Image 1: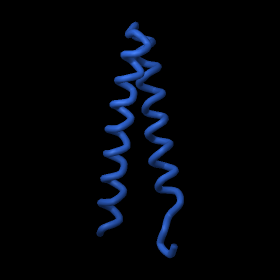
Image 2: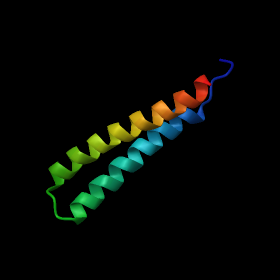
Image 3: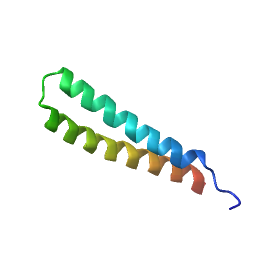
Image 4: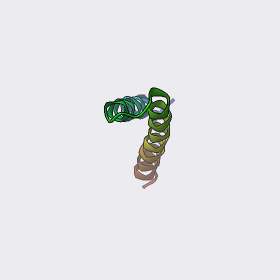
Length: 62
């Protein structure tokens, strides 16, 4: 387990959940139906998680 960082997966999960909540709430605030805003929030969550993961692994490889 040497070299394993516990904070990376926790930070990845937190960024994904915060993005989902923020996008969903903003879209509901702008008047979109709840189901549509939740779907778009989920898509934004996946995109944010992928961007965060690629940035973390890029820094780790060098």
